[in-house]
Length: 365
Ligand SMILES: Cc1ncc(C[n+]2csc(CCOP(=O)(O)OP(=O)(O)O)c2C)c(N)n1
Figure 1 (tube, rainbow, N blue to C red):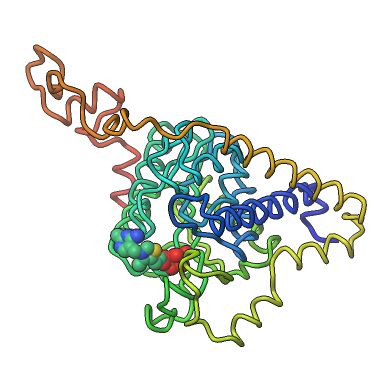
Figure 2 (cartoon, rainbow, N blue to C red):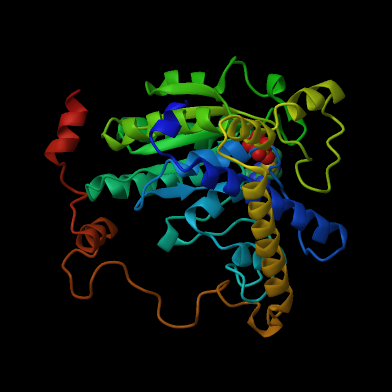
């Protein structure tokens, strides 16, 4: 028996969320082919063990900073299938009010920070959230993710450096799917494992089979415990494969046929399903019930989105330009020193201008 079973982790719930993630993406691809999706469609078929597994390790109060392929993380944290479908179909009531058709959405009630860009720009923001948690002395952590391509950009390195120096409660999951768009790993970086990047920042890093959901959960939990205990950030590289193109507009013919076939044999859902069947946790009846429920959820989300209004053209500039009116002056009126940093001190109740004992201790290390 796997230790996760002993620990009473709800393995069927994990399987259900992996299946739901894939089913929603498949539904969206069909809608895209029918010309009912406005923008591009970026799927993550093959990543489900990584995205669902990593997010399943979190607790209430933790935050995620997900990327464009992280529907699984969204569903685990509570983004509703209706909201996702409205977003993909760019409806006026979608989380971005019809202004975007991708997973560039967040919801701070569910601890989801919206992504900025596909290439690591969200990672310094993840550091900011983690710094807030540390300053407020919460026992919470931030789970951020990025692709292999993002690990070669400046924001990735700046964020890790800051997280390490400040000992921030940050877990970074690198979803290494072998390609950054059409560029394979060997043309992107000169390390064997992307977890080796951790050495440069003196933090723990490990590489796991990103298509084995239980291995992902174990590794991300380990990294989470490390961060939660105040020991700073950790990296988990999840090796996986993007079965479809970068987006549905990409045929991915740069991927060798043999490589694709090899990875298809390691499909994370099929593998987990075989495990659950072997352990007699998933019966044919249970699976049929689950599939029927998933179909209902997808049908409902599509129906709801299609019945939702298109965005109102008259509102196109809302939230784009600042409303007319006086420009806010930083600091408080009449304050003798209305500098930005003093305003921050007042706002947060913490002092940015003086060094705490804790910070001093870090400095002396
Ligand atoms: C700042 C910026 N530069 C370039 C792009 C175009 N672009 C989008 S995704 C991508 C590759 C991303 O690769 P990776 O980080 O490995 O993530 P994956 O898509 O494989 O999950 C590129 C070059 C972008 N979106 N933003």
